[in-house]
Image 1 (cartoon, one colour):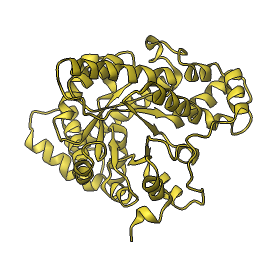
Image 2 (cartoon, helix red, strand yellow):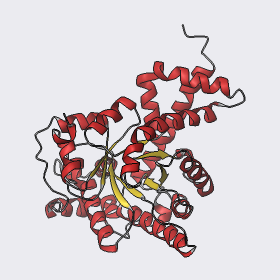
Image 3 (cartoon, helix red, strand yellow):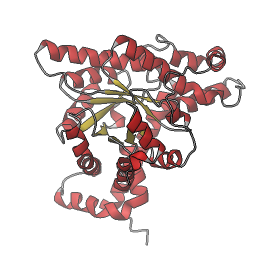
Length: 360
């Protein structure tokens, strides 16, 4: 039976230009997603950490093999080799989709080192390296002050990028403009511009931050109001991207409720959905109808805009300058979390390389 014809997610991908990605490189989860119509997947050190926590026994031998084959490598190089191998297994599963769709779909999105968020040169260097691993690898670069020039340069070098650690309209526009500059430079040199960049908006993480910011400021929002913050920013960004003809495609990430799926059905965007949310959505009774063109209720926008300054900063085109991206609350929280997860991943690799003699 074709799952794409029997599940809400499959109907989303069958009837609309809305694409589904799997927000993980775990092979069983990716296989489930592909059966529901998924045409892409993503990975990063945090995702790989999650896979190892669930399936360390299945990957311990791979870590040991990498260690044995590279006797002078430290834990960081071994960890990145593991991340690449895990991601490339997913890329191989998606390759038929990639070849069938001429590169628009079928990509595995692989994230650069989150600890390099301040270093443009290192971000570009790793992006170029990832790009060479497989034809259908897409590279995540954070939307930080150093990330914006890295996005332009990587695009100029022909890398298909996916901007990440992005929460606001100002960040999304900065990404789109950086990509356009990179493509313009390629065109001026007669190079192909047939690449398919994406710009993630981490809608759920913006919701999280708006709730925290409101609580810190002693603001009591109407229950459920903050759950629309990310949806509002995504819908406004989508209208701006369409109006200006930006070639980057928007991507919704960081799911917290069905709004982050149902409100974007019908848009020419990507939904990168964690496995557990896919299962919930497929078991839901939420009607699969076009909602991308439906505006967020004005009363919700007015309340958030009037009471929460950080929503205004996220919603207004000029709400943040590029040199303010790193310090924006959602950005700082996410960067800290990604860096913490990266170091936790290194610790797991270290435990395989150097077994703890104090443990049984």
